[in-house]
Image (cartoon, rainbow, N blue to C red; front, side, top):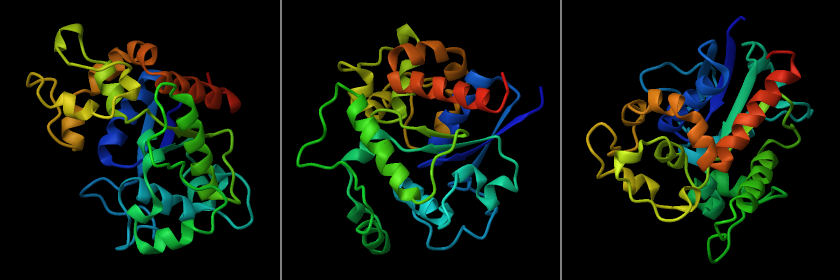
Length: 251
């Protein structure tokens, strides 16, 4: 089977590391994830879309979506800048805790543009209850799709929304003797990253950096079925990836 190329738009480089591990676990070694956003440190920007005014985190995902939407509509994967690079799949990532953010957390330009959108982030005076996980992730999916309007999500574009953060996937892959102290549902714990700090040296994540997360790549791949058992949004992503691959005749 020829190599499957996957464009990945994520909040950060550390998220890209985990998503790459997940895609490898699902699709095998023939999968080639290629980061589009953010551009990895030390690499030149692949297109003119990369500017000095680039936003970071979830604000950066918003900015990327607004740049790549087409006034003529159609599917995102058919955008000329994407189709020219012959990507088989496109992954758009947000952590579910973005549901609790506000557009004013980004630049003034983004806050002004977002005011014209039909769908705004699902914010309230209190965070949405968790569990259940699904209502917040579904609402955030609708928000993300609104950022692309009038462009739509096609069969080869995947939305990846770990709850509350992708750190839950890392935690779920840890061995039983890791001594991580999780409280309740790992997908509903807002402090999972903090719980990864005090672990033994080979397991701990001290800061949000791709190098720190890369230590867990092999473990996430090997324990992906366990991650899916403990994280419903990992299972959802798994199923969505396989459905997308089937949509263009790959198995």
